[in-house]
Length: 148
Image 1 (tube, helix red, strand yellow):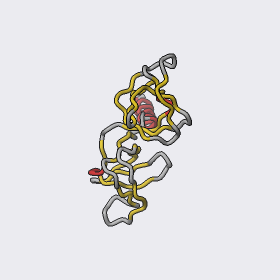
Image 2 (cartoon, helix red, strand yellow):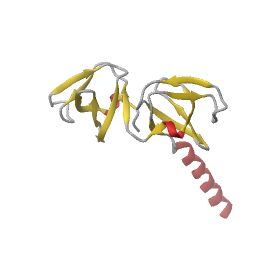
Image 3 (cartoon, rainbow, N blue to C red):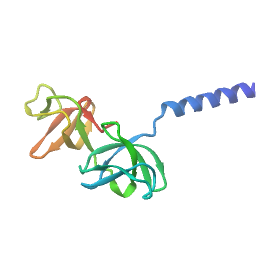
Image 4 (cartoon, one colour):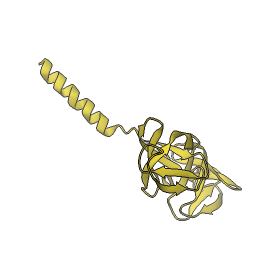
């Protein structure tokens, strides 16, 4: 009986580790960030990012480097000093409306094209309050990439 319970517990914990994702989002701290092929300054640069606050998914870590994936599915390693906890997202829908309040019945303030970078001020339920240049307002979460 003890073996059965132990075996069931092991299967449960292995299954939990498959479901539970350790991935999380951070943003780029600077206007120029190097994406490397491996977790060291010795590895060649694969790509240059030139957009501060670009959101990236952290997939793995090795010492002071983090393996990331961006919204275009590029992967590589970035030094932790080049990452920030500030929240931002990229629009993934064409013509995403910014509303004055978190409701489709409130006044539309602007229309965003696909691929726009916006800073996240706060989120609740299915809406996020964002800021882009001179515009502030609420958008539906489903239209953004960079949030869990």
